[in-house]
Every structure is written in C-alpha cells, then in structure tokens.
Length: 193
Image 1: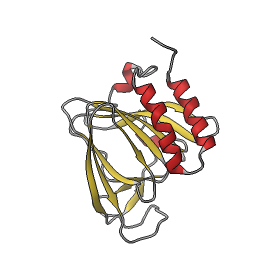
Image 2 (image 1 turned 60 degrees about the vertical axis):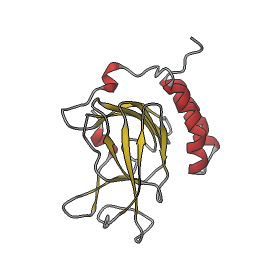
Image 3 (image 1 turned 90 degrees about the vertical axis):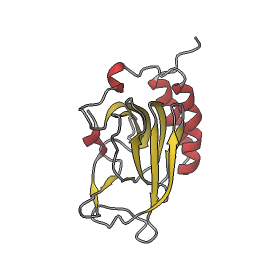
C-alpha cells in the first residue's frame, strides 16, 4: 500500500512549495505532482467531504489551513447541473477533480484595472471552455487567469479539491452579479458547510 499520504502530508508538501517558490506559476506547477499523488488514494477525504450542504447549492468543506495563513485546502461539491457563477479568485490556486466532472469556462477582462475589487464592472470575454474528468488538475493564476465559472458536468455530484492561497477568510473572491454586472465580495468562508 505504501507510505501514508493524507491531507497532512499533502499540506506539508504544499507548504514546502509555497516557501520555496515565490513566483505563483512556479508554485502551482510544483504543487501539482503532490496533489496528483494524493488523488491516487484520497487519504483523509471523509464521506461527508463528498456531500453537498444543501440541494442544488455548491459548497466547500475545510480540510486544512496552513498555520501561517499562506494556503488552505477545501473539498468542493457541486450537485449535478449546478454552477459556481462567474467569479474571480485573487490568489493562486490548484484544483484537482475527484468525482463527476467539471466544465470550466475561463474569462478575461480586456480593459480595466489589474487590481480587481468589489464594485468594478465585470464585463468579461470568454477565453475558453474546458472539460475536466476525474483525475484532472488545473490552476488559477490571477489576475490574467483568475476569472472562471465551474459547472458540474455529469449526473453525479462533482467533487474537487482546491488548494488556494491565503485562508478562507483572506482569499480574495468576487462574484460577478448578473443583475448589476458588477463584482461583489463573496468570501470563501461563506461557501463552507
């Protein structure tokens, strides 16, 4: 069976990558092999980490927060057919698809400030649509690669693991409000069940 490689071991490897690579692109690339290793057995992922909080609502389950506040790890569950809505992550992230499948639509702002904040317009241009089956790993690299929408693309719950910069309270996260077409603050901790 090999040596244990649970959430604690994954978190240790992520912490080492965060300390070693100040460049976000190098950091996410260094984290991907550790996440792939963890995804082989999913040690430490409990049955409740695979369940939605409510019918027809995506939510997350906090698995780990780094003591220094540099990253956190959550499982995210999307019931079939649900979507995250278009939103922006203001810090790096690495995402592994565990069950179901994700359809990710990426967006970019052609014009506008590089510093993304609540109240700004979110007129976006679609840059691509990607389908990720279980076992896939993708990433977020703001500001250029920070806007996206995720939709559960199968008839079972979509379950993924997200390793994100900051903490659930400090990770910059903004939702594109459909009515006003402006960004609104949507803290990650509000998604946790």
